[in-house]
Image (tube, rainbow, N blue to C red; front, side, top):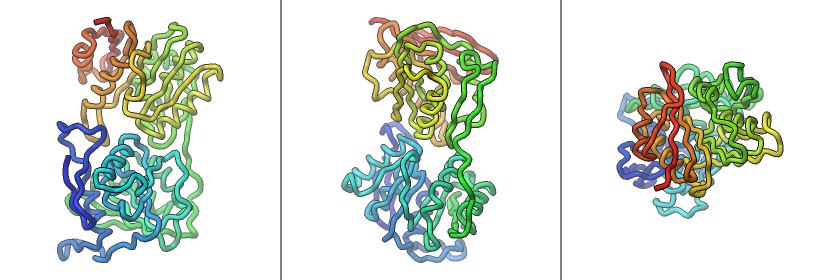
Length: 395
């Protein structure tokens, strides 16, 4: 837990799920810079081009992409609407707002799948890693802006590029940036009511080629912000080439499903199976649902869960878990996500159930699997990737 001091108060913030051993804080210099600007706090003389005047927050305030709720919590007294693509970010904001003493309805927690406010007076954007997600969100939100809307983006200097500014300029209106402060920068965009950037180009789709094993010929649907939305990633392709099938009416979980091609391929190969798609990304869940509907028979049973790994799946209810785990969270490299996925899989699997994992060789997932399951078998490997199989034994 770490404390963020602002003009509205000091707040103890954590990431989600909360881990006292996590060395990463739940806010950044970009968050702090934006909050200082909103409060009208003057930066050191000669080091800023912004006026030291507070922003009027009495209207409808929308906060987009707040990673762990620092912005939402700090502005909770103004009743902001959080728009996020992340289940983990949403739950972090919920916990941090409650810890700060605000009522649950003090803020509106919405997702990229929800309808945005019809009118926005102040739009605050934490620049995401995905340029496609930013583009899609700006397209969705532009109709709610008016000539008087205050639009401010924030990010670290390594996250803001010419292409980032071009999106604001093309979709919103005239755009400029601040000077850098603590390696963070602000983006100021003035809405142009006459500007028409047209509709978003998302979602997009592609057909898996003949080298995609059990996925060959499937249509993958991708919403903005999904991992490898333009083409199938090579790790998933490798697992599709060795996908376990022929298990009949099994309960299969596509864990960290992304666009859902692994679970969909399993459903197509075994129509009597029940497939559960799980991801913490709301665009991923939308993609998996659309991919499944584009390929699988209507009779195939499927469930789609936005959540933290297998936390919402009953223990001992799963026969097979398919997993291509991420090794970073919001640009921070970490093995914590993979560990939660593996330990959650062990709890969710029935005795004799299997976890199949694909990952880069250098990540040494076999060490984690042996510690959790007591076994780990190499199914297949190539110079870059390895597929591992762990079986839940009776103990």
